[in-house]
Image (cartoon, rainbow, N blue to C red; front, side, top):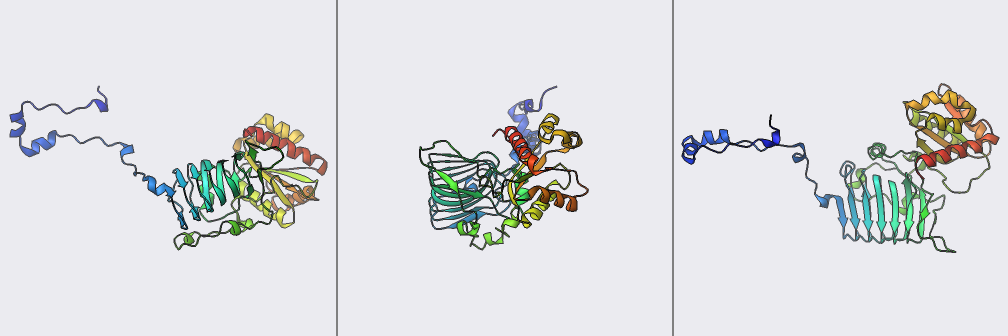
Length: 359
């Protein structure tokens, strides 16, 4: 047997015989060129995935218009730029005094030679080089990195529009994995600090206003922290109390909804959400984290990753326990037993999680 690629049209048995058969015979002999799946893909025009050389403009891409492609933003000045979709990677070069929103990025976002920009960004990896005075509301699954950059300020990502949750899934990003405040400076300067945190009461719209163009107004946006797709955490800010509590939800149909419900309940009572994490666990890791309670939770680990939440505030342990008993009575949940054990619970879990995620 020959293979498909070896098929060839047999040469005609003499030129006059071929002509004598007429046009119909010639058409019968002629074979159609093979069609491959990659031939039928829509052609990508780089111009559809680039903003370059713009000044004093408001531009953007609506949900579904980027659909996981790479994107380039370069040489823009005094512009408002909105990417309301998920993408593969994004590079931003030589932009000045711009306001930028970037929806979930499966890989990396890289700012180079930018200054005086205000941004909202969700990504797997965040990096800057040779930048000055960037203010960023960030969701980043890994440790953000700055290099040869000064005057950098960071806050926690807070944003909502109806398509955003699915875009996070399409980009392979968990809404619970956000290391926005754990910045690594590749080029620290002795006696100086190249980065800091935005004020706790910073208002997102004061930094990146809602789009003004009629096309982009169609996106139903909210910057209310209580509606944010990403839970708003304190990160590395100083804790208000020496009492924290660890709560761990196990994989199931309502894991995300249950975690969000507990966050709403606890923050509504005045407690602070310090950090969140979604990560897979093995039995031996469960023993280190859950100690004597591990045997009752180990069978649940096979269903998928766990979601952990750290709450802080005087009475946090009692507050978590009572809320879980009242609201999640039928759900298997790990919660710290006491103030004395809670700090060790938090340390054990997040040390494990950081090692698991390679941080």
